[in-house]
Length: 279
Image 1 (cartoon, rainbow, N blue to C red):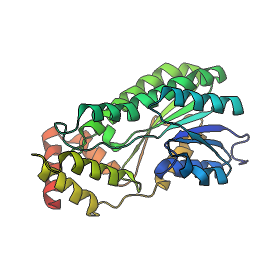
Image 2: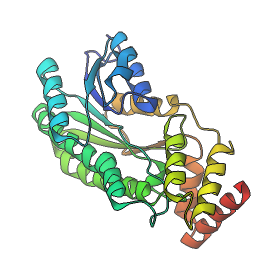
Image 3: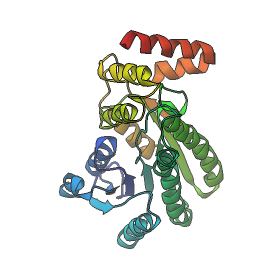
Image 4: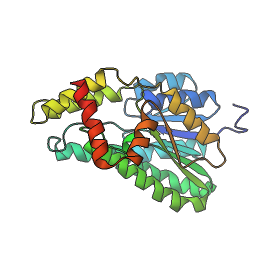
């Protein structure tokens, strides 16, 4: 157990089978936390189990799956001190091209699944009069990216959801934190590119999809290692009163600064220039 903690605290992490979620889990185990990693691909969390953690097979879009996972953790540990909502993916492609069923799935995974697991842990945190909920958003929650209409919509929604949740739960000693990563080394980028080409690679938006692919694969922005976000997670968990938002990762701060201070049309022009230069 880490001397920094004083006592072992329990953490539930969704999307723990790869990328940032796995990095969170392995780091928090080293820090002395009791870690439950949750994901559909439970076989990909064997390293978490080997390091002393627990693996939960969980599909955040399945209410039964989420209920069983939370119940198991509470039965075994008696409490949930922190929830890290990390599960998510990027469904990229022109808004006109992406089927509405796929758009709904994007919201089911990135927002409604997150909301349901949050609902299930809140009674336990209220009973403890303590807890931390960390929602992994994106710089895409504050700006927009080419062909990212549905993904950006989920992250903008998550930002508002998190603000309301923070206001409602503060009275119960619960902190709600939003982390807004920029470009991070993970499977995410490849999935977004594949999605954009699948839905828009042969449509009227094909030139835009190809430019997006070239920009994403061209290396103009080198993704940051997951560690930069993991460091923020640890910082937020340790803090007696964490910030409401943390930002890190390649391109996040400069792009969010631009979005805050330039007009919509000016930001459009910046994106157009980026896309043109990649084609």
